[in-house]
Image 1 (cartoon, rainbow, N blue to C red):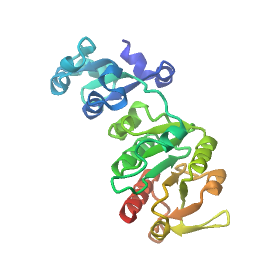
Image 2 (image 1 turned 180 degrees about the horizontal axis):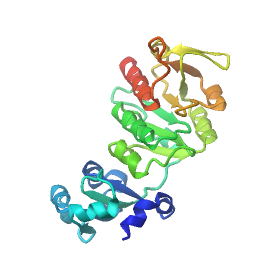
Image 3 (image 1 turned 90 degrees about the vertical axis):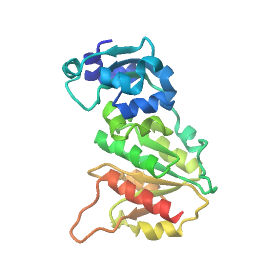
Length: 269
């Protein structure tokens, strides 16, 4: 296994149906069954300390390459991995419909849960953070458009704390995502700064959430870090909502805004 080549070309890995997972927490999730579990792991590069901490030889016999911390540093050129990297087969991709009709569309109280939609994100850290926030507030799934970074890019996985490996998600063109939301009768709430967007009023998020039918699933839609939602997506959203800001403040980071919105939905529903 040429780890340097694998780390240098994520696109080539994706074409081969593979991705790289890094860090002990992420590997623990894989060993516990996420994203195909141990059977999906092709090879692991790890320091002796990581091999011992994760009991890798027992879990993955014949698939572990042990290297010293110094050798790992030379091979990887970075130190975010906490002494362990894994080459993993990508799970079969889900469609938009697969995510929206998944098994977890209701919580324990029978209330509909929430979906997250991300349009044209640029920063891979924001992709990972959106997954982390969605998982933290119990979202049923996440839909991300094809202009956004690959959720299985190693930095996105790390930033998500490995939750991208556990959640139901699909990456598709935005028109397919919008069509799926409409087909499944999901209430769509686009997040955008307060004011008016293309002549439409933008409601206070907390007030809007309290007025929505709790029996109907909701999709929170977030957009590009610089330009927000596209005109087409904003027009397709049934509601536009914003988060009140202090005077003179512009807006929140997209992942932070999503966390606030998910909290509001969790608090009211």
